[in-house]
Image 1 (spheres, rainbow, N blue to C red):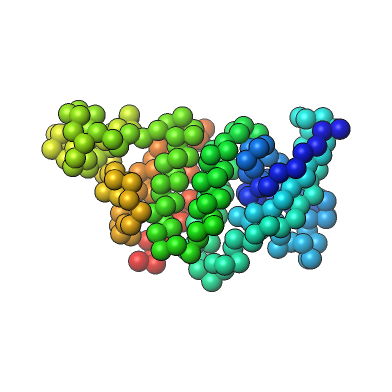
Image 2: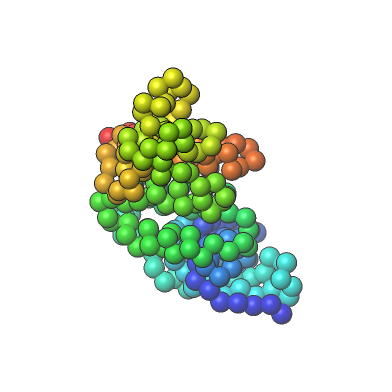
Length: 238
């Protein structure tokens, strides 16, 4: 028998038969991992498997490549703290949907796990949405497509970076971008500087920027539906 224990962030819990779930979690030592959860639909335990919750998981299977079975215990129900905040709930759903859509199953991303957990630990921070945009930049880097906002791709200047090339992901100054400005993506100031404070317009612009590059990481060329809902929710509230 193969077995292990880890902590994990619940990404999804899909019904399987009458009394079972296929539970997907993101763990530091076993990556994005699925398993079968018996009696996961009981009324007593259903709140444990809410998307975004931090759980302690034990996995067991006869062979490593099998789906296997989970037993889980709740560690921290992140959604409870923001249950009356539709925007943050949409953000959690988007974050989990992106991890599920983009990370190769069972590949390890320990640093991304730590950043994701830290982000969830600070859900009530006033700068949470801007931190989410920085998190998406790290997700892109983990997927092998780092965006470079350190200097202008054309002149080497480090100041007045205002646009990003949709082909290379490299920054360009406003002056150097002038002839091709309409073909480039706007670069929000807070992303270029690494700052956390940002306006709603800048956050929406940042989500458009990161979303463009993230969509190129999927076979269908589209972001998860939850990611679109986050942008719509943010646009409608402000």
